[in-house]
Image (tube, rainbow, N blue to C red; front, top):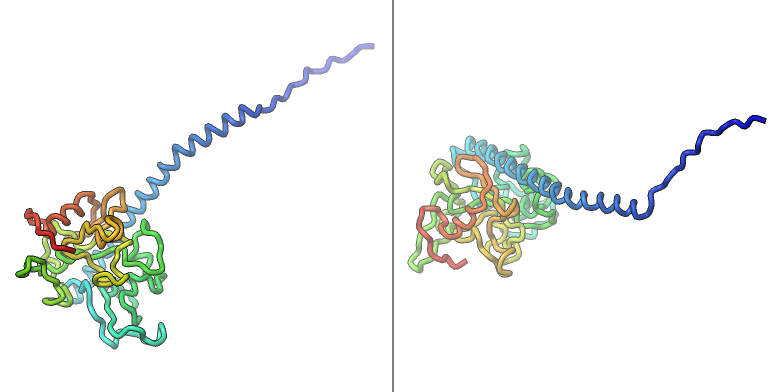
Length: 277
């Protein structure tokens, strides 16, 4: 009887445990190499988005100036009784309400009024869904109550209204000009008018002027009570640098400007005295 020949059987060989472990190790190594790059790209995108927001705020400033005869909004002010809605949050718990430039610009961004009997509702994130997409930097962690993520630089914003008093301390602008408003064309072009603010600022917890939405003379690099993180200062959250909006409404990043302002608050080339903040 003839026997038919069968084709040879193909031997199926599986991966060994060692080979699987090698493949997994290679994949893990590649992921560990790529993840930092992806994180860097994400943070870089947030920094670019922050610059775009500052430019948008500059557009809102120009719109405000167009209506108010070229005057910048006040860095800190007290709204009239008619501007407050004392029913939205129930009975008023404060006798004096203070707002800032963010509240002043709000209507020029969203075409909507703020009617809350609360000091600095934008910076405190009260009803934050109304404005979080505009006034807050994406690199700042979310918080129910915070001190604001952009602040005006008062020595520039007030057009040099600071004066050296007899005791050798730069004067508090509130005594001379409660609104701190000025025409932008009077500002020094090389000075920033708005910048990334430290989200751990002590202002807002009873130290100094609570939530006053500005950075004062001598405070650009102020260390705070813990020696570094919680002072009222510009933040270096974007690759060790800060995003600024300048007098001509262009925005750019700088890693050196914060330190320069701390030494020479008006950038006139003269090192200023220790203002004692």
